[in-house]
Length: 159
Image (tube, rainbow, N blue to C red; front, side, top):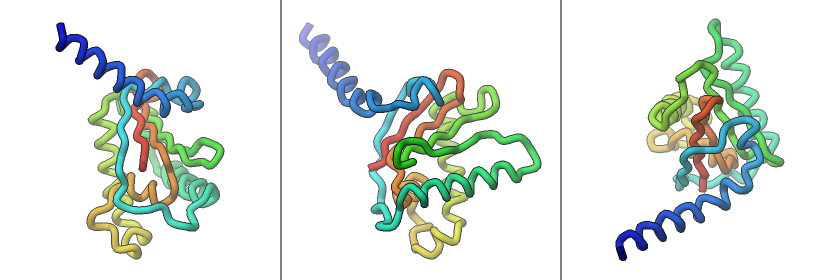
């Protein structure tokens, strides 16, 4: 019986720890379903002093132009939301594409490889160890949500 009570308390406390982040999520239910899972990423870098809303919007606009310039339909779309444009949202555009945590993480790994090849990463000597999430931290993003746009959403808080 004691194990059951301890397990129940652990579940309740874990749920309470997630509520503050999810309670303030004004995009859930509009751009994506309520996240089924969340995690916190401890970035290896600090936000750059001159990273602001304008820089984040410029970053997202650049990626959007790159995606739109491809000779095939977009596999995913990316945009920023929030008063400070510090919430990045990635939406899969094909059924089943980003429908699991593993596919979401595979996309992040692919975006890491792309980010490491950029002049920005190369100039800042962080290409060897930084991830796409570290790149987002440099720009001042606080949250990333990856969704299939139907039923699956995974949210990453960047600290």
